[in-house]
Length: 304
Ligand code: BTN
Image 1 (cartoon, rainbow, N blue to C red):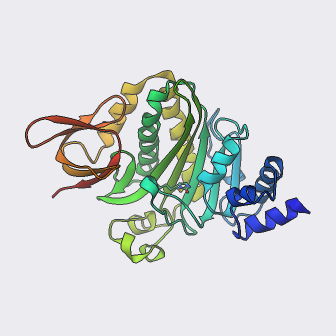
Image 2 (image 1 turned 45 degrees about the vertical axis):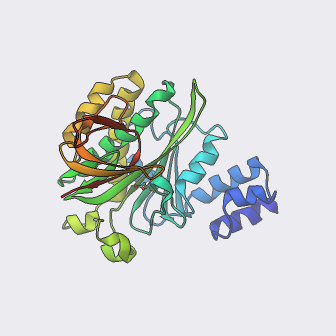
Image 3 (image 1 turned 120 degrees about the horizontal axis):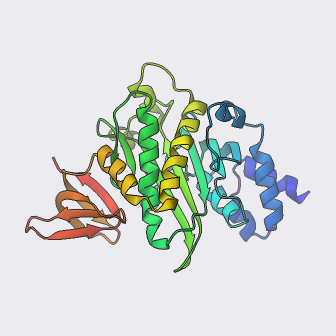
């Protein structure tokens, strides 16, 4: 009975898995089973079989879970990562009702976009965590470029077309000082959506593939193209071939060589010229007085 109740609550978005656990309605096994069962056979256009038609990966996406509607694929991915989900597991939802963006912001994820999360367990030094975000940006930009549009990366990993955002990445991590347990990489791509599908305040800086292309995108194919690209860049990441990733990132960058304003976590604002990125993925800014500053994270705006 309990499991059925939880499934119902989750499917109706009445309750999140965190809330269900807090209220002690369930144990970990029940919720894991419920989430898994909810994921199968309920989607309307994104399916594992259709994705697999174009999938060429060996390790990434051995497990693909497709959902019709969830709060946030990252939240479910984190839950499953804490319960031994395998490296390379992919979660996709056609709709997210409480999706999360970088820097604590909300992310709008209506029907028509690609909303997915990957569970990774790289055996690399925790100092390399920041680079996974850049590597993911490279894979997204390359997969969108394969459709014939000039996608570029704004530091750290927004993907833009003609200066407008089409995709973002939210990376969440569980690691100790020495070791990474898991990384969840959440990817949002505004694919078959119109600007009217978003609230007015974000329309101005946003674009979608529907706005940029004459025909509808095959979302299952684009997901497979992305996963194929991701596997390549992830292998470089695990092998420590950082220069290759950074070279691609620099070639695709929309940020290097521009004057920017960066609001760092904590509110500090840095203004200057972007000289480049270092091999940890931090941005190097030359301030007006000629001194250099390294920025690890923050929100960047180009100064005209
Ligand atoms: C950003 O702020 O640019 C990052 C947006 C990340 C959105 C994706 S959609 C799939 C995954 N689930 C979430 O709740 N967020 C990420």
